[in-house]
Every structure is written in structure tokens, then in C-alpha cells.
Length: 237
Image 1 (cartoon, rainbow, N blue to C red):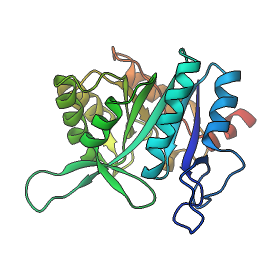
Image 2 (tube, helix red, strand yellow):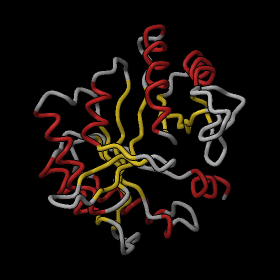
Image 3 (cartoon, rainbow, N blue to C red):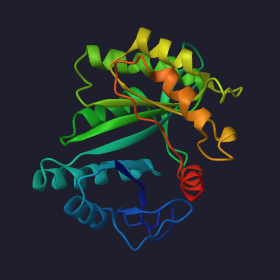
Image 4 (cartoon, rainbow, N blue to C red):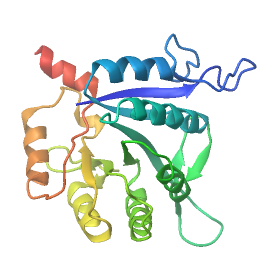
């Protein structure tokens, strides 16, 4: 089980910006909970992992500093840093994977991973590829950094997939996801998710059956991406 939380900077892009990371979802930039208070409460009372969704690139470095302090006090704690990845089309050459932040900033995936590799701590990385065209370049970047010894943390690869009863145009097919991972960089935990278009009635049995069939022969760890709203609808039935 993993606890996910959004992280931004207090007063981001206002005259009151403090540089202090807080737990808040845009457009909110203020919160009753600073990131430090949230981590202290969660790490002291729970054995769950922590998945951090950074809403501003400015929040990354101070939050990692807090995590470093927390992992010194609690050496067995774990967490996951979420990286939303897209593509940047250069004037010449191949498209470059970049990490998006909601405030408009972007950082090359390779540079972001290299910076994270230099930080101490007990967290993993979750690379979410929002578009089908992002999948192969992102995996190629991971493979390159791994070969250079710059990818020492566990990595999960997330993608919304189209398959069986949830076949929806515009998403990478499930078979293509598995084949690309196997060919380019298989050393990831695979994290497929269902298209939002098919979740109006929640996670129906056929959706689950088809996803399990897709992943049944994988040797890698698998973590299915579930949305709270559709999951709650199923539980309330």
C-alpha cells in the first residue's frame, strides 16, 4: 500500500512565496500541512510507502532534503517519487523525454534522474509516460543511465493501456507496452492502468480479468494503477 500526496511550494508564484514545500493540490498554494509536518506524522504512524507527486519543480530539492533527514531517523522508511514524462521536439535530432511540472517548468528526464541519483535516501522512482510516443525514448534513457551506473534506485514504469474490453484509441496497446519494455529496458516494475473512458461503472469484472490476462506471464513486479473514484463506486455497490 502506498500513500500519495501532492507537493508544491507555499505561496508559489505569489509575493508571499516562501520556498517551503507544502502538501497542496493546484490551484491551491497554501496548506495547513507543511511537507515536513506531513512526513513526520505519516512516517511515525504508518509502514506504508509514500508516493510524491511534485506540482512544482521548485519543490523537489527541499523535499528530498526533508526525506533525507527522515530516512536518517527512520532508516527503513520508503517512498516513491512520481515523474510525469512527455516529449520535447528539438530543432534537430530525436525527441527528448522531459519531466513536466504543472507550473510550466520542464527538465530533461536524463538530467532529472542524474540529480536524483546523487541524493541519499530510501525511495524509488515511478516514471509515468502519458503519451504512447513517450514510452520508447523514456525506456532508452533508463537503459542508458543504468549502463552507466547512474540508476541505482528501483524504477516503476506507468502507462495507461488499451487492451481487450478496455480497447480505447489513443493509448499504447497492452501488448506494445510489454514488448517495448522487454526489448528496451526490462528492469522495471510495470504499472499499467485503465483508460478513464471505460471506468464510468467502476472496475468491472471483465476489466480486471483482461488486465490480469495481459500481465499473467510477466516476471517483473506489477502494480496496477487504480483511481479512487471508480474504486469507491465498486466498493459501494
